[in-house]
Amino acid sequence: MKYPRPSRRQFIQRNISILTGVFGSTLLAACGTKEATQQQQKEPVTNACEDLSGLEETDLKTREGLGYVKLTLLSEEQCDNCNLWLPPSEGKECGGCTLIKGPIYPTGYCTYWAPQV
Image (cartoon, rainbow, N blue to C red; front, side, top):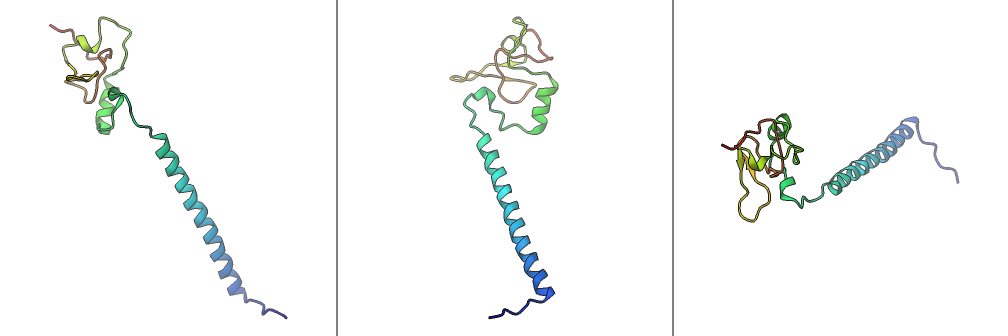
């Protein structure tokens, strides 16, 4: 039994449909993989002093611009003996700062450190 030979138009349409399906499903699969990988990489923060999730991009840039580090090498100049230090509330290990938003380590330091008077 002979099958009828498809026209050139039918051949092109069929191949475009197949290629579109293959390429589209491959692209969607790749996007799903990337999204799943990104979700796996986001591990829950277990240390409250490391949780910066509530901060905006400008707040993060301010922290960086002020040179904040969580551990200073200068024992006399650390956040918990700075004039701008906000002590931690009861049951918390990190405090705050009047200049920098977000949690601050007591052993931290920034370029605006000022001695307590």
